[in-house]
Image 1 (cartoon, rainbow, N blue to C red):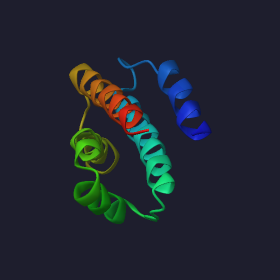
Image 2 (cartoon, rainbow, N blue to C red; image 1 turned 90 degrees about the horizontal axis):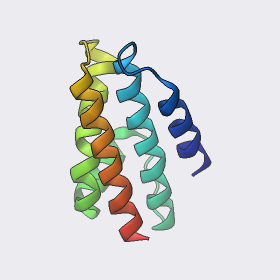
Image 3 (cartoon, helix red, strand yellow; image 1 turned 120 degrees about the vertical axis):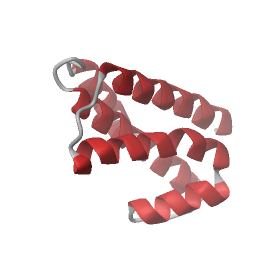
Amino acid sequence: MWQAGRNQVFLDGIDPDEYPDWCVTVAFYKAVHLVEALLVRHRYETGNHLNRNNLLRDQFESVWRDYSPLYRLSRVARYWCLPMRTGDVEHARARLSSLERTLEALS
């Protein structure tokens, strides 16, 4: 979980107007680390995005609902290199907050 905390510190330091793509990307990677912690507690190993996505979709639907939009949005930022807007950053932060609440409830 320390990596998720480091990602949050980094996310808090990013100017969303200047680097919205990085805000979205870091929010997603914080989500990855939080989800991986959940999966380890349940003795699952993923190893890659595809396996993680399938496992979340099949075993943790409530987590998947918030994680999947972060995954999709980060792919747009990382691979399609389409411009991110302030609304995209706000959406990513809202999904991340919701994901954190869902994970807390599962603990």
